[in-house]
Image (cartoon, rainbow, N blue to C red; front, top):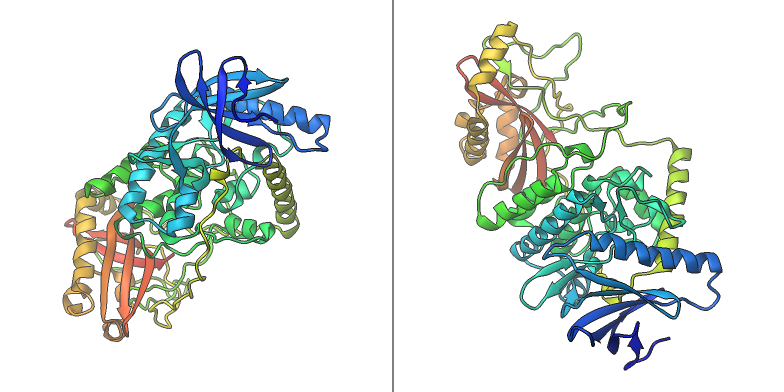
Length: 507
């Protein structure tokens, strides 16, 4: 094992050990040829390591150097050289006086939303460049983000990254990674793609604000992976203006997430105080050919008590009302065949154990924030209504539908949503006029009864247009208790182009 003062590869003088993991150690060193401070990452093999494991670790280190060298960005740690010492590869990297985000969170617990957004913009910028270079990081987490004294953030540790054209050199293959920050599709055994990095970025920023990742922390890897695979998590409660941005990054379906470049722009808009831009579905991951069956929507939480849409009780037809587009996105049934899921989970666990055996190269990447007490779920202010149907009322003619749709802009729709929630719960008579036939079918009396129980409601952040629907985060106040929910609102338009809120599905 190398020691302080030793010369590595004929030019790098070790000065101070600054980090270590199960299979590596990182030193602060001096490049005696160029007279600059560098970080030297040295492979450290444990006693009893087999020749196969030794070669795998060696190839992993070489691959990390090769991949990182392809990425030149101010928010990514630069690899200067891949040298050799005593037959083993040594990575020579940029030295950044810093702490990992993980160690900062372990000490402080959480960070303010705007500081988290600033970190997120920098990380997203670096990952945008990585994706353009054909690199998927696959292991983004607080431990792999370094924070400098001047506010700069840099990503590091490309040990399990994959570049286009690379072959797998680890037994764990694509399944290696940190389970708490994995995207749902990766937990299900599918190939990681740029969209998977977007989700991991969202999970990392969520943890920095809420104190733990979206799916929590659990020593039981199988239990944690089941939660990740389902893609269900509590909406952030402390993110404030960053909430809508996080919800975009954390969409369970990778096709519906923004690209990394869009994620960067969304986070920058939050910092600038601008409305966050709408994102288009991201590329790089295709939905399976056979889509899962749609599940029934949850009860509406806006005060609507709709009738059930059946063949004997169809939605009310109102002349001159046309749907803007199809209603709220179908919620996908994520239940998988039990035997298949267990097989996938077992494979993932094996991959994670292998990755953990290889270990992070720096103990800066090991610290995780202490888990706060699990928040108690608060019941949503719903009525005992039947589930909301998300099918908009039929139109009179195709011509009417096209004409009405063309008259409605996203600005009009968002203005209507904001106006509606500025009226309730006090001015329900005026708010009622902004509802479509589907929500009105409950009757005015039931509508009034619901809002009589609500003290206040306000929009958190900015409503987001997703296709032709609106995603909005609401904070209800009822009996001095605050409840945060995410809703998808289906919009219809009258013939004269007036948008109406026709369906409301709580997610």
